[in-house]
Image (cartoon, rainbow, N blue to C red; front, side, top):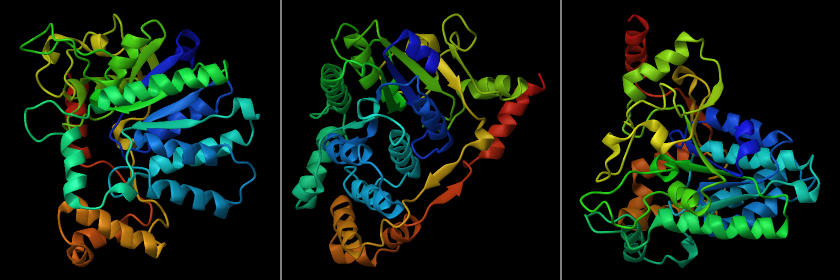
Length: 361
């Protein structure tokens, strides 16, 4: 990753499943290095949360209790869902704050969330909330009214240009996207391959900055809960001792592998290889070391936020607040998400069997 920043200014990292934690240890190690002089941009978090996030990241000499209170305040309004419960983002923000304590003001790292602007304070009824969600992710075959990928890319471009203008040393950018949002190039869409459309945030960024953008995939499990190439990639890394490594895709067996990760239908993904979609790959930790870490410690100690969480979930589920308050599922969320819980990924035995099948060939 750091080597790639010597060659390109913008690195788009296509991350694993959202709650997987180990990948964020790698990300923190990258941005902790003095050679990383840029900012971080993420799919996670609504764009208007950026001001509050960076107010925190640029603070100095906060106590542990003050750090926690800032982070909890950020998380209460981070997302368009009732709560973003994945601990790795909490860890990322806290880590950047600590890194910044060792940097001069002009060298401090900022983080800009890129998701569609949203405020829970402006949502007053479930019709309003669900109309917003339907415009962004329609439950039919019609185009979305709110194109998340294009909006996130445009937010990135405007903010990236602004940061470079204000501080010419901030031309490096690490952009963290999930699944197809992080696909650097996508094949033509059928049945109209000439239709001028961009289907991912990463592709929009790449087309805007074609000479300075590089797309990198980290090893993982696709959102369709399958291993790439039926586990052949994982077997290759296991055979070599599961050493952490990064490399360019072009003209490698990995790059020549037919693309088989999650896609959104319509595009001719089955006709392209991985090197068409991505420029590089990072292997960091085998699947048996993956950690799913969920929970934001102390987020529900604030009783006012518990009440607000009931309101939000009631709007999401189209139920009354009273029904939300009596829901076992919702109350379990409050209990479970108030503490950090670590688990291995599901179906690990099944995945290991797939990998080991290749090891014996």
